[in-house]
Length: 394
Ligand code: APR
Ligand code: PHB
Image 1 (cartoon, rainbow, N blue to C red):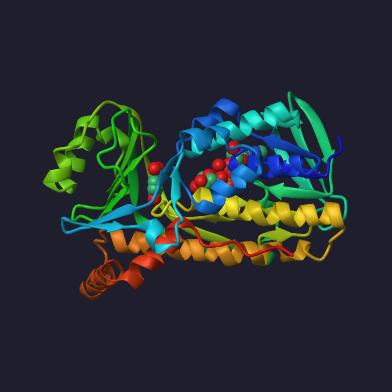
Image 2: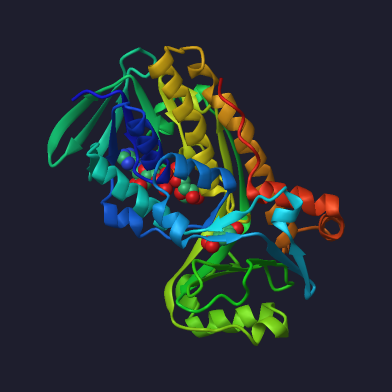
């Protein structure tokens, strides 16, 4: 089998890259280890930056998102019971974010891929990448018990944190940067109306709380919990009681509880690998970087990588531009590190750290007072939250 770009992984990165390339007349094959149902079963964040929304529109997959997604012009913080609105649009010359779940983005992309007729092979095993430093890389894998091979011009490693792509780069070439956080997030999804029109990021001495939503009738809440907690220890009732306890009375009274559709604990990790390319293989999304979810940058950074890579590949195929290929890693990383910084900053600002020294706790408090007490501080938060601009590829 032959193609132009072999894409490993059919998560949001692989599917979006595939759609943009397909629309530009560039041939792709996507290889995915799991089934479509498994991929859609993963519950992830639900906040789309301005640039993400625009790229999904450019890819022609925005019909349902534009009809059902909720535009949010603000977000709220809550410290010591005090509510602090952050008017995102006012602070960013009219920009906003959209509430539309990652699962829905993935579903829309899967449907678009299917109707385009471009191939996605699900259930592949033992994917191996070969000759990445040559002009003719190839990918081998097992499918339905048969050994298969794809010859291609480029490989896009969109296979997430545990994928094979990053592992195919010689170790001595890679530099990994990592920080693991000393707590987790316990999330609960329920068909109950959100407690507040805007998302609320709340600090509490018992731990951080996020009140998020998927729609006007579906809520997503998170509680900071010790890493040693197991989800079985958290009945729905215990979750709702703890949430109420961490919210001020006026919100606690409005909270509508209900049975959970999903409940899980996720650890928090900050991770970046450099460089994000090796010969003719490019790493995209979670394959190259992970952020803690505070600020919802995971999907948005994946889309940012796709934005750069597909423009570079289009310039290569349409205009013969070979010079841009080597620029991918640096372009992507410039923005990745800013996203890492913001996620790190938000995580520090909002969580309870038992391990912090008395001095560091005072610094955390001063950060809160400074960032949330001045227009300059709020503007910094707002411009990062709606998403920093992309550099142009030319
Ligand atoms: N072969 C084929 N497919 C693989 C392999 C492999 N060896 N290893 C992993 N995959 C698949 C996974 O099954 C998964 O469907 O690659 C896909 C990677 O998808 P994601 O993990 O969702 O990563 P990405 O597409 O980069 O999306 C980034 O997802 O994890 C969140 O916070 C993250 O929101 C961000 C977004
Ligand atoms: C979510 O809705 O799942 C969500 C929203 C915002 C975040 C993280 C997660 O910062």
